[in-house]
Structures are given as structure tokens and as C-alpha cells.
Image 1 (cartoon, rainbow, N blue to C red):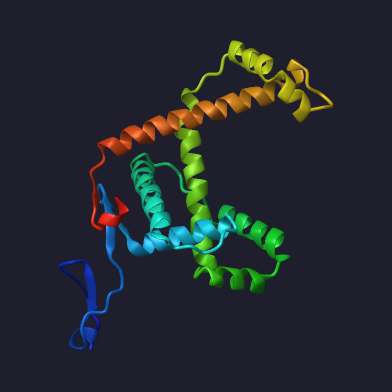
Image 2 (image 1 turned 180 degrees about the vertical axis):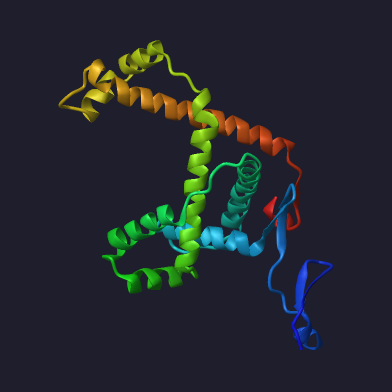
Length: 219
């Protein structure tokens, strides 16, 4: 008999083959951001990926899950903007290069060691690859969406140099003239303005979005 998946009230998932034995909980929707459902498994996986990448001990605490749910709400808003704006998704090959860099830097190029470390966090290499695809897609979206509107004036570059001259001299002891550091300063100020534009947009988009918490401990 074909096994069917049913969604019953309370967001508990059953299969017909297990119905006679009682409900088997597979997943729950924790938050709805607009039309995008965020499941408990999404939150759990995001915590695990973040802690793996940051080399932090695995800690699925309520507070960590709450913060992660907020981050996933932001991601849901960005996913919608990326989809409706036809922004290009990063390729698997680009993300694979980052996976390979982790394999090389942290595990001496060993597939087995990488898989073992991922399994300790309850993750797979495919999930790590998908995370990098998403991160690269977000970076590309931010750059394409906000950088064109950013203007850094010569006066701002000069003011930054004069304010941070001592710090820059320590950071660049060999060459720290204004002419030499002007491109670096301009890039720094541009990145700061891009981040500020993105944060302002995301804050406004979040306020306009209907967000419903189905698990009250995540509010």
C-alpha cells in the first residue's frame, strides 16, 4: 500500500502506515514569515551549521534556537526578495570551493575527517554545500541590490584617513600615505554604507512582513 503523508491539526505529521500505532511526530512549523513556513528542523539545522562553521560546541539551547529563528525570518524575507527580483543564485561549483577550503584547512584534505566532524553535529556534506550556496547568494544579492546606490566622497575618504591615521600606520607600517591607502579606505567606507543600506532595508521589510510564531517560546 502506498504511504501517504497527511498534515493534521496541530501541525503533527502522520503516515497512514503508522496511524494505527499512534501519531509519529516528524516536524513542526515553528514560525510563518509571510508565506514562508519555518520548521523546527530548519532551526535545528541552522544552529548546527552555524556552530560547526564557527567551531563552537554543539548547543541546542532554547536561547540559541530563538536567535536562530529570528535569523531565519530575515532569511525568509531575503529569499522572497531574491526570487521576485530574479537575482542569480550562486552555483554549486562556487560553494564546492568553500567546502574544499574547509576540508583542506581544518581536516588536512581528508574526506573521512570532514564527514566525521559533520556527523558529530548531525550534518551532511550536502547540507554544508547548500549552506554555502545560500551564503554566497546572499552576498551577491546584497552587492547587486545596494552597492550601486552607494556613494563615497573624496571628503569622506580624507576625513577617515585623518581620523584613523595612527591606527592605519600601525596596520600598514611600510606604506601608510593617503595616496597609498585611499583605495583601501574607499572600499572600507563603501562596505560600511552597503551594510547600513542593507540593514535599513531589512528592518523595514521585516516590519512590513506578517510574522506568526506558532511556538511561543521563540517570540
